[in-house]
Length: 77
Image (tube, rainbow, N blue to C red; front, side, top):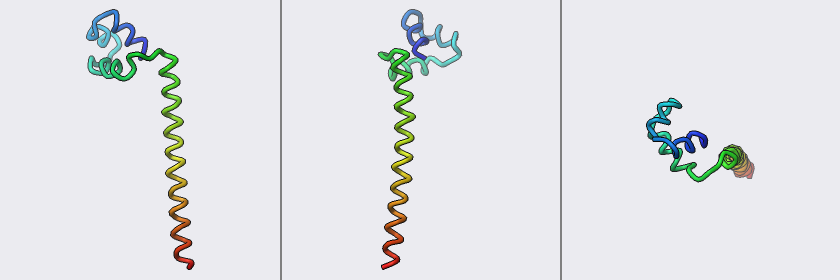
């Protein structure tokens, strides 16, 4: 992706898009989101996004457990 963006900096966007089989709008969206990043930065960003998703799932599971325990404790008393 970053390589395609760097290529689009040197050539026209439609030319690069056709060469790589993506739409012009995709390249513009990538440029808007990843324009200043290098390949290493994108890799780290993906790792962080995966970790964030895992942590969100963990928080959701723990929240369900807490709600379940509260419900059980209310019924006992």
